[in-house]
Length: 283
Image 1 (cartoon, rainbow, N blue to C red):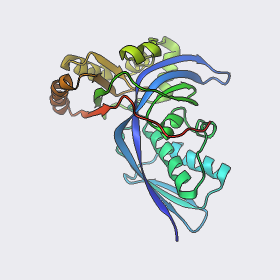
Image 2: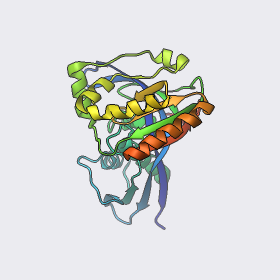
Image 3: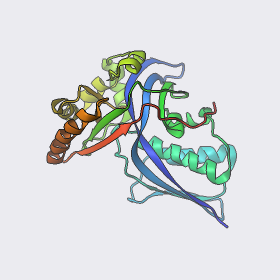
Image 4: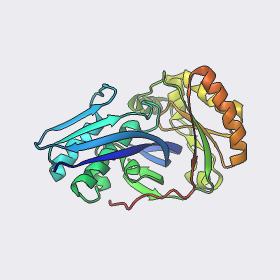
């Protein structure tokens, strides 16, 4: 009997992100606090009775050099797989710094592992497809370092109550943002200070806003509504505001919702638990 599995693969936010020096082959080293958030793509993997591997999207869209298909091919090359049909139903906004393509690739890796009893797929394999795939494969609250292969579980100093704003008309491409960062630089911060005082930062924010000044409107809405901690996630374009105060969050998030609705923006409200755990890791 042919097997199948359904995976819900979650988006992420970078609560803080330092871009550091480049490694020997030209990749930027990163140091970031990453948290999974409750926005999910749905992935269904169905075994075939031949060796063909197919991947499609419910929306009918397609992506050049699809990260998810690269993950399938790499796992097939290393482990050997029967044929599979993979269908992805996307809900994570694209080009917003929420790790949508990496979430799908990580979800496919988890699904193939479970469906065909592959055992834990090590970071040394996952990192070959994308820098943030290892942290999204394991999930939870993590500190991501190096190219993304060094994953350490962390506990935040408090639960965080979050508003996330997305403008669907803005799609930023990671490679372009990093190229602009190399040209104009960005702000550095202290990861250790963030873990103590929850002061966010993102080294890529200056470059992203230089490419697309329109994204700054998201930051302004969050600040104007009352969030004292506001930061861009990943390479943009989404911004999040957060507070450890659940009571203040109720009032602030209503103000954000009203303005987001008037401007046709996506507004997600959720809690990031301080002690969100990750699964067992294999290097």
